Image 1: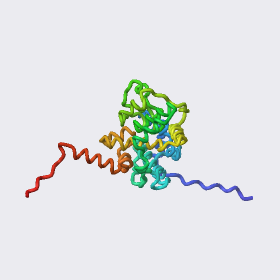
Image 2 (image 1 turned 45 degrees about the vertical axis):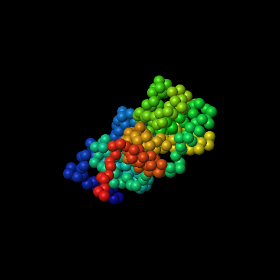
Image 3 (image 1 turned 180 degrees about the horizontal axis):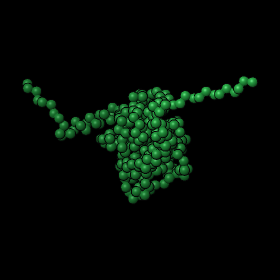
Image 4 (image 1 turned 90 degrees about the horizontal axis):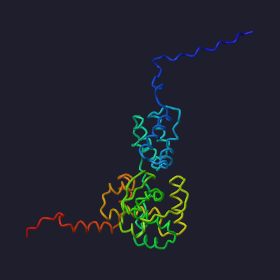
Length: 297
């Protein structure tokens, strides 16, 4: 009988070949949990976390170390030149900075730009007022007037400081939403009285949902009413209106809750000839405008 063969001895790992940093690297789960805690500490909303951040971060292997290579694999696993790729780069950049991982995803962001509505999609002041007057439900009239006057995202109309409105404060506080707390001013200020915004009345909808679901309910309601414009187009109209008033891009962008880059990329492309002409006329009517030199005849 042949004796049972002795299994070969595995080749030992030399100390010089062992990467000791593996023992000290924190896992993806560790950094995601701490990043999430910091995210909420900075006043960001749960809805934004779920729709923009967690959709990306949940793709990381939770029990593996967070490394530059792993972050790069996450970014390049998304389709180039898409909203998802742009979002992945945004999220990964923030996490890498937070965890002090040396990785910059910007070169892979691509050329994605959000859909740009055309000038014909933007409701006029007269259309907005006429449709508001046609509504019977006080709650939905209030929501329409609030979004039109302050350029809110549809779900944000349900997340403002109504007590301040009742006091007649025309500077609106958005308390929560996609981009958190911020202050917004009325354009046109006359609409505050015309749309009776100091008397908040909300429609009875379920607010114990994600922000995007709340916003969808409002958008769908006005679609079912056959509104002559999309609810979100009121936000776009507000952006163009602030340009007509001469509000600086940085201030308008801050009140809308997005970056100046996004503001310039999207909204300024919509300014039609009428807006340009008004801006030109205001400049030409300035007493202190530059003047050409007289011709020597």
